[in-house]
Image (tube, rainbow, N blue to C red; front, top):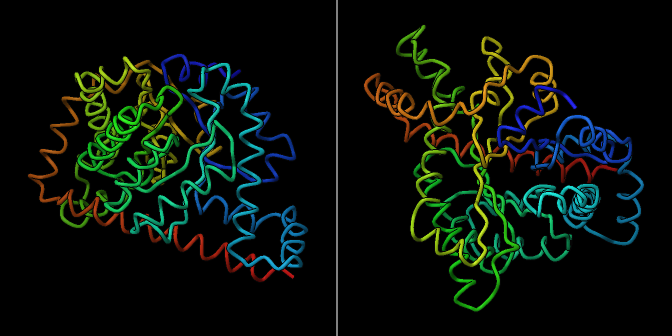
Length: 362
């Protein structure tokens, strides 16, 4: 095991890989990362599946066979993606058991075209859960306003959810409230909650990209550049700590509730002027998940200077940073609104590209 990656794990952060493909599964690449690089879970999204299926010949035979059987393009894409997720779930089964169901998790996202439709999101979430039929699955639901009620209903139905596309602390607080409400609904129906797990995926790097661009337009070389994404995640963790200290949460724990852990997503560094490990090393604290592309994993392995909990000591500074952004004229509410819309669009575009590519296979 890598010393640096082991140090991340020892500090309480679960390392998940933000990637999945049939090539990784069949070549042993993913198994190798599990055995050598502290990888204890996987996340996927429409962009990941689009790249995986477009870039590999391993899917062609299945596509052609399904077309021969009369399956439409959407059904073929569902068959391909769920098959890979099933295989990944099986690969992580031992970790799932050894971590008492905390890790060994694999995520699959509902159709991104449903991001602003509550009932279809709920229906597809239930469909994916039943189709894949693996206890270590996480169904990804976007944290749009329409997605919030889906979190509650899916949780109440006994489905473990990964809430994705969170950009603001305010929205994150609503996400946590929906998770708790779903657990409460389930208890009210005299159903167990001890096997339900959840993560809340807070997107990191995109905030720096957008805020830095806006700072450059009004104050080139501002000392505020490059500090917003980490500060935002730090305040999210503060909100997490606040929720798990409430009587409401403690009452749920008495019935076996599991924490909805904060997950740091979009942790690849886009601005090459910044240290390539910053969205891992500066976001370490107990009960977190960091899902990272393999390139970032390799950077942490090579030179990640892990120094323990870097989040809780940064809380005061994070509040000061956002006060300074406000003084500088940065409308953070507008930034996160733009990022949510842009994130939904990017996933929808990737899904459409995947549908088009599968349709073109002959």
